[in-house]
Length: 230
Image (cartoon, rainbow, N blue to C red; front, side, top):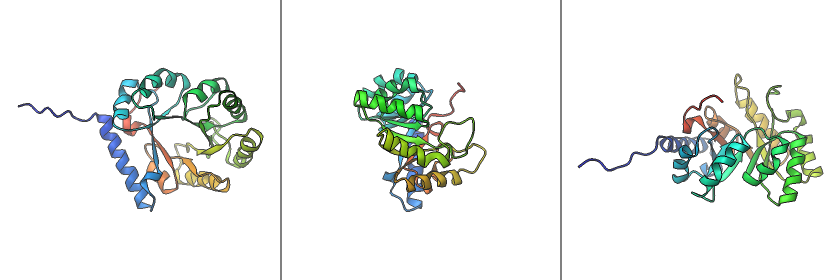
């Protein structure tokens, strides 16, 4: 008789590999693997390529654009209402209302106008997504994020003036530099501001992120495969 066993979806196989690598990296540095959350970066991939991962038990996903997520995720959430959706791309102030409505976590609070828009919308709607401040650890002029030397002041403004409960920090190191100093810098800013959540590390460097204290790693291409350039 022919084999009736259904082969696992390739993305699910890759997901299991990444889960194993996360667990090993955590154990290797004396951390509990359960303390590291995998954010599966599903940006640019259609719902039909994301659904197998939801069915396989992955519950945390990252999207770059409000409009793309708005088109895909209402249907996907019907598969698992406990999915947590992270915004990991730039947020425009005029998209704050939709972002607050759609996302459970907004990782890219990067300037005062965005923080003000989020504070106003959260007060209006009563929705309270967790907020991370994005830090531009490499001080790259083309990249979003608060400069490291301005991070303490920005966090104080968010908390004290706007009443925002900032949950953590996020960074995207320069592609042409060693990532460890950037992760260490982010961890030091978080520590002196009493923040326990660190979103750092992607497909090529998440193990280093875990070694340096990441609580969330954002992995896309290593799970979904390479995406087409926009």
